[in-house]
Image (cartoon, rainbow, N blue to C red; front, side, top):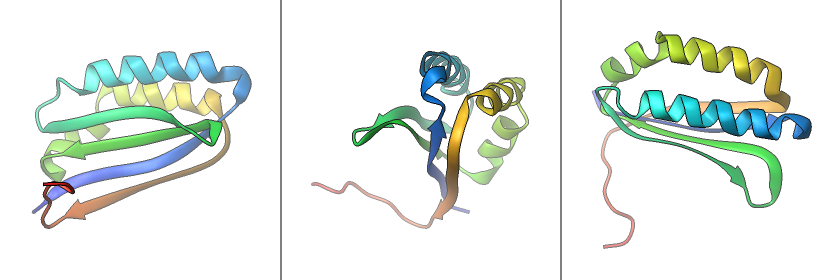
Length: 103
């Protein structure tokens, strides 16, 4: 089984931007210490300050499973429910091989 990459966007309510940042920072702090988490980041699109970018990398599906069932994931899901102001598009990819793009 290969690595798992999760990538996507969440359109937030502009009035909830600070709450979104707070929820993302709390979620990231709890997640990056989880076994099998190789990367976990949020950011905003440069062309739309209301589009939250999500990028995760996991060693395997087995590492992702406990994360999805974690209390901080449930808390984040509740917070995001209050923050969403438009489309949510998040996709999970299983990666067979990977390497640096440059070099």
